[in-house]
Image 1 (cartoon, rainbow, N blue to C red):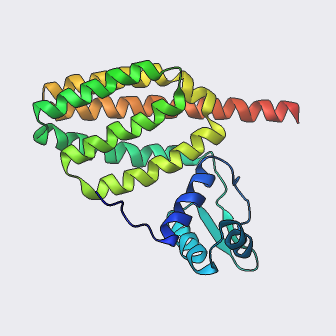
Image 2 (tube, rainbow, N blue to C red):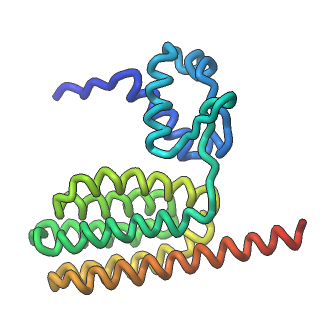
Length: 224
């Protein structure tokens, strides 16, 4: 099979996006077009096109006389991100109850069981968690939600790695419990139970993350 052709803009976009998500480019970092063009050995055109897409995705902000900078991270966006994920997960998961085959259910169960082995590897677990929920979108045939969820997960990963890595790791056991409850609801084809599990899991997660951020803020005030 021939490899899919990737334009220079796509290659530049993927490189810059990865550097933003992994913290190579920290929040607030200026992205100078001339410097990027020299570093990546391309013209300014694919750089500008990639930056335009990154701005549309919310990863950079462009201001007059300043130019493009990596969008600052706001801890308050925890609620916004979880609200978006919760809404999208409920729609896709409830729809999947009606479209899911026994083969799909077996695949989901296997994915969740494999994630039990990654509790000490939070970054790998997070990647598999995305794969799990995106697979549910595929089962439900919620194409638009699939695309939107990918972008929201990217913002969540950036927030998790910058602010919440420790508390996120400590919550993996609870998240796995929620996944297994969701599988049981899928087996029963019980959309109401699926929705209830998702809401309970997300609200518990938000509470834990906000408590962690409040504690960190108080500690900074004491030290300051």
